[in-house]
Image (cartoon, rainbow, N blue to C red; front, top):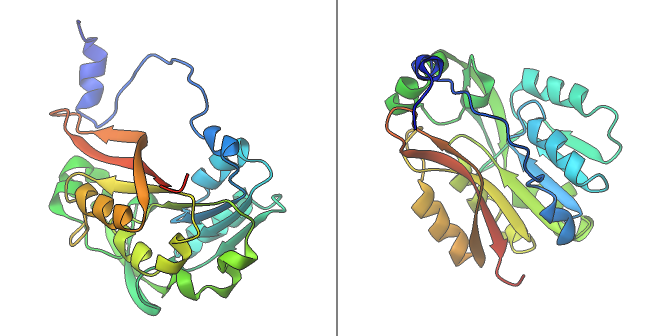
Length: 237
């Protein structure tokens, strides 16, 4: 199949253009299995919270975002939502204060150092500055004790390589969770991050079954898998 020259030109800048084909909302299946509570870890400015609100208009949403300016934008985005609450902290394996590498492109900010592969793939993410943040363990968040939440529970984890720490700090919480949507990488984008196979092993040992992905990102140069939003469902379902 011939590729339009304009599309080839855009590839060099890291962008792509595809014909729009309407697809069914990928989050509506969550309504069918009765999700009533969403824990949104790594909320940024509310992109996921707004998307899932459209699919689950009656669910309660609890979002975590450690960067102050992103947290403020998150509150603005969700200000009229009566079933929404936000926390200006990160989640991890320990309760502590740490330095976060705040990226000019806020969605690429991480507690972990960015790997050279990330900078090569996304040159616009190379600039960072340090910002002090607070980290808490999910299992220590009394407001989010499973007994206080409406069932069934979904947790979304998108923390730029810090996902395994979130899991380690929330083992008890995950025992009461039905669905996990978690960003998993196939190449090292952040130093010391666990890749898909290791996250898969962690979650299967906790009783979850891999069910595919909502979204997958590919390397435009060679077609290789970079990362995806993996779906894990508790095997009791």
